[in-house]
Length: 335
Ligand SMILES: NC(=O)c1ccc[n+]([C@@H]2O[C@H](COP(=O)([O-])OP(=O)(O)OC[C@H]3O[C@@H](n4cnc5c(N)ncnc54)[C@H](OP(=O)(O)O)[C@@H]3O)[C@@H](O)[C@H]2O)c1
Image (tube, rainbow, N blue to C red; front, side):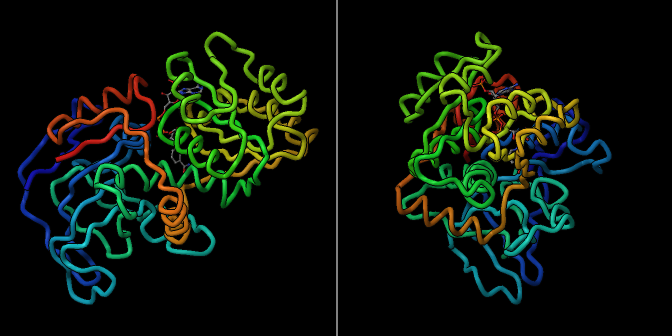
């Protein structure tokens, strides 16, 4: 079978190599991967920004879906022929988050999905939602579950409230879709008017071009009667956090999940105190939360926005598209 090996950091360090089919051990399954979806994390892993000490070669990419080709001893939840999608923080099944769970995250340090076949623990997969194909299912594990975590698990948003989300990438577009189904008002930003027009087609209540309206926090206040939004889904990080805090109402919530502008920077902590803001870090969510999300997706027949599709041997091109930020919603790679 073929797998992508990251032999040195950078997209150009990816090599498509022939390797032996891995054999599932106790509690493990072999999945024939049919589709992958890309997340910004994959780019950070490949660039060496996520973990500069990563041992190479490594198989990247966290999210995928496929069919179970074999099962190891003591596997009880999954059978050969099942159609499954991955669960990113493999050991986080339920209950509170523990930092050590990150050691089991798929796409390094756990197994990567950029392979024709991969061995996973049986606990690291879920059945596909009803009516979903592999490409659609591959978009859910990180982007949709993170948006769910921001809006539901952590955000506890209620119908009629207003949420702000930044940019039009995978997490933000799922946040828009989920929020509209939850009867929330949505303000969304982008550097592109064409992308904002697509957001309005998806039901965005208000849109702001953050490239032409650099004081977009002020624009949010104007749209909310000077009060600010109830919840901000913060996808961009330190470069936008101060403005997000200004755009969020006193006592409101910020689901801080993104690093598009880097992983550290100056923050006006005084704003947090003076506005009694609740800033909550997000690390995707548990398998239990993923099951809740799947039920929601099935109930509302939510369909992911897949903007670009690439073939398996075009993974480097797909990553370059993400690097350029050309996409809207999700990029998938299929076999
Ligand atoms: N903590 C977690 O659990 C978790 C989970 C998933 C993702 N993340 C993080 O969340 C972020 C988004 O991930 P993703 O996979 O959705 O990324 P993505 O699909 O690559 O989205 C990138 C988009 O974000 C927008 N953007 C870029 N810089 C921006 C800025 N300064 N201000 C506002 N918007 C900006 C751009 O949209 P426009 O072209 O429309 O401007 C860009 O196309 C990444 O940092 C990722 O690492 C964290």
